[in-house]
Figure (cartoon, rainbow, N blue to C red):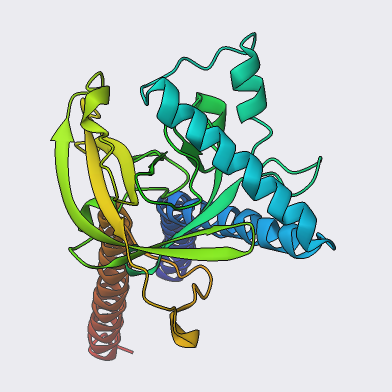
Length: 303
């Protein structure tokens, strides 16, 4: 009788330990999985904001209204060309800055001036005016003082986004972009294709690294580097490709891309689950052997 009570207590303790282990396993997996899931979800949400901009442009009934918006943007770029392109402080009291904030907006309620898509690295972001922190936490920012991203010979539009955010990918994978891979800018119902031509690493204060070349229509994409340190800036240059866009080449929407840290996170989760499954198998094998040993011992007891 005492032996049976001891066995019952051991079984009860074993069940409690297994339940506690299961709870700890699930909690560990959820904690590790959260940053991956939240990042993918926020990337998707950013892509949806970019798509909404396209819908707002499509809802403008008058072609003349879009043409007027484009003419204003062209006039603004001409003003920059005449006054000189350079980094400008975002001063809310400056009337030129206030005029800039109204550029390329299809309606009064709009806050997005365009969309940037880089299919090869999974980028699909709305473009906002300026590069303030509250802007760059929501998507890509157009650098005030550079040309508006409407294309045109001699124009250089600088677009910047974060690298290393804890809850969104943004430009995390910009360093992976290879020469000749496309970058698409969608603005006022038109999609402009650029192709990557080169990259360089500069200091944050080196604004002269964004250059303007006569007769060249280009983008400069800017993000922080190295990952997690952010002491420098990675500048990726892309030059306009005027060849007609094929139907299959139109930006087709957001495609999830896993950054290196996401892959590492998922690998750790897989390792934890594998270890847990192995431990479960080993414990069951050991319990079975113990039960078989007890049964064998009991069979040899005198009756």
